[in-house]
Image 1 (cartoon, rainbow, N blue to C red):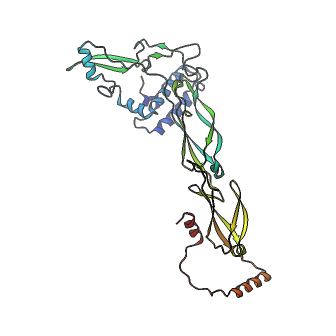
Image 2 (tube, rainbow, N blue to C red; image 1 turned 90 degrees about the vertical axis):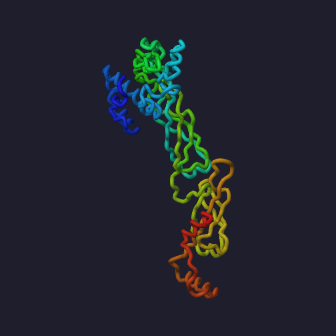
Length: 367
């Protein structure tokens, strides 16, 4: 059996990304739909099998160790147990053929949602390009109407055993059969649709319920929604990595929503009631008389629904008082009358104070 690294044309220390790139390049070149020659079909099978082994960290490690990896109970080497079995007339151990069905790989999909969708959660239909069961062979890897046949070399065991003499006695070694690759059977007529893999690439639509309270970077796991395994093996899992889009008005601090409202100087002096448009409907807000810039108004239970548990966070609104820059003569006269009536202090140095936005930030964060 050809070396898997040679089949893909990569070095033995190639990174997973280099292995993936090499496989994609060869698959496009050798796929039966593109290259109908028999040699290309056979090479496509070798390349695909090599990628299946080298793309799995555990299988790649086992492959790199070689068929003699392990001694005793853990590897393919017969070990002392086989020596004792040989001395006392016991038969050599066999692990049996390995199944063609293997678990599929997990998949990761990034999902972007708006901030208003985070409040109560949302539903999405995601289109995912993934491996699915081949409809032609239904995962059997065989051309319809045909079945695998038993390997004549290993008699269906998937293992080739040899007895070797050593100073300690007879040692039995067991290696995967090079003809059937350890499966115990051979597929003489592989499915032309999936090239004998039992699965193909396809776009699948998956309905997803995104819970309330998710945040950027959070991963949701959907068991059994990942890629189907070789030969129709069980599906891996699908992971959804969330990203919440930036909002022009509202930001987030945990499960609280933060916003800033601009009010006129007269409303800050006399107070007023107003209605603001929120992410989930109108919000009634009361501005109390004498409100200062950087004060924070808290509206209970108008934030984001808690991801785990019940209830919602709060909406925290920072106030910014807007001073008019252009006044007509009538307005100027009224302001002068107000200033004269109040007998305000002359401008003077005060204790150092942080800027408006710094104070807003500190009050938002509870500092």
